Length: 323
Image (cartoon, rainbow, N blue to C red):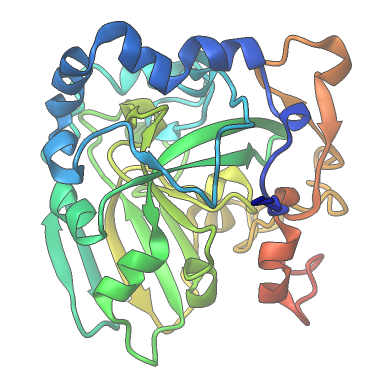
């Protein structure tokens, strides 16, 4: 008899949001209901169907969704931060779907690498070996959380494609710049284009992920189409959206929020319930989409519940000073 032992980062049913919502939105039930042909036609609108061998993505057995109930799709796609399209949670869903086009989309991989790349996002997905499904916790620095079923590929595969030189110590990510289509970029709410970064060893961690979809569909514009960084042990602002450039560097990049307010937002952004934001506690979090008053808040977990997978990356590092 085969007995499978769950990994620590696999969420129990009690830790996630809205079981009924997940059953309603389950990607396999969706395909059965509408038929593969109709689903395929919708997905092909972004070119991802041909590029990846089809969506929804094949579930990675190491990151199973069988016992999980992610946050309802309606909340994931309507309650999020994307300051390029406004600072209110509901603005990105409206403004990012007016005149902004995310197909075609070119991504440049450059810097201290032996194999620089500049190619269409669909070709990048092909070279990365296609996509898979992973369900991760998501924790915002604003002290709210949700559970997201991402489709995409491990960031480590992209790193391997670029073949970084030994002098490369960090990975810098840059988002798009298009003030005509993204009104927030003309408002002065942040310095644009948005920039984020990771150390090389963080980028190579098994959890680091490049998302191309949600709920078995191409990632919506408001959630960071067509490529978004996902590092589930870090606060959500590390998850840079709509990436156009990935650069390998020898020096730590200055990420946008650290540049804007370094006393509140650091480079690492590791989820830590013991280190409060200067203006609010990080000890607990609001569960977005929860229908239970008793579970509307829950304690924040160290590294967002992924401590055993990532704590070794920060051995000897003072996590209070390096927030």
